[in-house]
Image (tube, rainbow, N blue to C red; front, side, top):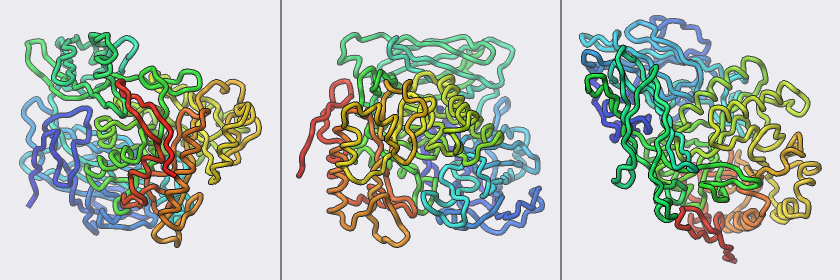
Length: 615
């Protein structure tokens, strides 16, 4: 019997424990398609049409077929895979549209509905949707078929940590093919809000609003925007929609006193969110569309050699997070798993994470917004420099910025890591121009956040100089970064990782420096096949070495932030503070004390650090 999809509200979880996939654009009529689908592997990509497919198995969406959670657990090489599901489509009233949405499919997705191809999408980390209103016949089941093409050997596409060898090696992990985030249906009006964008302007005490409308009729439209905080209406304005768009700045009443202002500012220690209600009105006063969202008032920038949050210097204590789970790969087991990862980072004394080589599920960013955790967004790398890889990575990076732009937790953008994809950066003008172009493109799309053009070394265009240094001797780290005239020596002679830090030392001399990868101390339950940049044999030794290293790094005034490697063990890498199942290797309170020292939170939500000696 073909199942009928239950209607969910935006604050409900589906039967698989997953929340509404667009937490900053919430509607109350969504229908989850997560769960059992028919499935077929297509190793040579030989089947070109749905009627050629030999359906072999069932798969549990949204877990990739490489994972145990999917029920397939095939980590071999295959160029394509197929999905099929039949459901009774939700009934759209006259004038409404039925959308089929995908949060992420790796890498090229082609979709058929009831035998008709509705479209194709390229890019493994960004969402897409198709209007299937005319194809969802209520008199018969709605058959959805998805073909996902994902060449395991293609090094020219953004792939992050997905290995191109059969077995994971070095710092690379199993591949992620096909559907790996939520699939759902949604009913929207004929004239509907499609996208919303918020830009806080702290200096002017304003919130910038951008809104885009689909299906605009030949009549005047008005968008009403209501902002609320702690039950109080901050602003309630309406604007004329021009050519399907609205771009306005909403001025808030400045409370004047610092204590009152601080109640509205967002920071990791005071994650104050501003509720947003969006109502789209027609010419005759009829409500055409309604959605709920949120934003925050906060600023991120660099001033001289410091990173500043809300116009105050802020020491970033980040942890590098690969975002993998033992049985489900890149996909969190459920919404509770995403929330718990945010909580664990905070409980270990960090005020932020550097999401490494992964564009994270928007539900993670929602919990970071709500619970208070800063996030560096980093584009998964391609590993070959060619015209095709440049075009593919750039296009997807633009989509990533558009998707995550409005999240308060996002405080910086990182398009390139460790010269991956630009291996001849020191000698190749083309590769240098590419990194510079990505930096300036990112600054063009978002002028409000710092951009790290190439994190780790060989900076050619950046707001922050990131340094990757896995020296396991704290005394050497102290000497390297605590000597007289340290900047000229660092830029001219020191080469952490064997690379020059900057390719033009003079013009970067006044920028913030951050130690954006270090540590990597391994402690594993089973030492066979696992590694780290340094190894311990007991929890006691692990606690001591972590504390000694962090004691040095926290006191290095040259740095405006640091990022420890890493959050949790990930496959063969045993250098996490947590085991892969998120069990702490040593008590969380010991990790937190070593990470942060003693932290006093001020009334503005920022921090004041004082030293601690637990020896």
